[in-house]
Amino acid sequence: MSEKNGVQSEEKKNRIEIIFFKSDTCAFCPRAEEVLYETIDDFERSTFKVTTINVSENPEAAEEYGVFALPTILIGGVSVTGIPEPGMIFKMILGAKARQRRGAK
Image 1: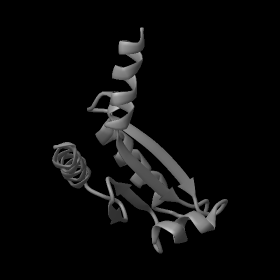
Image 2 (image 1 turned 30 degrees about the horizontal axis):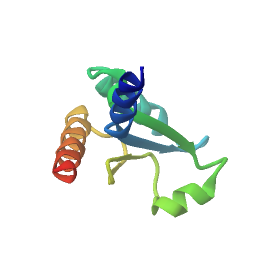
Image 3 (image 1 turned 90 degrees about the vertical axis):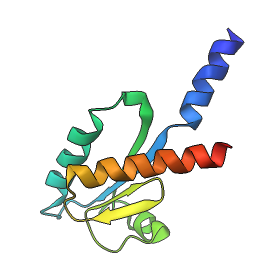
Image 4 (image 1 turned 30 degrees about the vertical axis):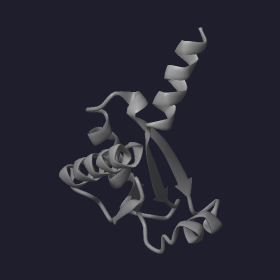
């Protein structure tokens, strides 16, 4: 059983972190969120750790991450602002995965 737990914790450690910044008044945020989820639905759900930060409720978080425009999607430390093309999100995911592999060696 401990081996199984070790595998699970390793999988969690290797998940790609995605942070989506939005606000209650952002006209473009719903579409950006839709594009994000449509794109990551092509992957295993366990591939990602997705966090949504509503800056209307938590403005300090945006400042902490250096986010000054919405919507912003942060994937593996790289950000895109506005409504991204699915191909851009896919490239950011591949880049994050490549950085993980380089860091693991």
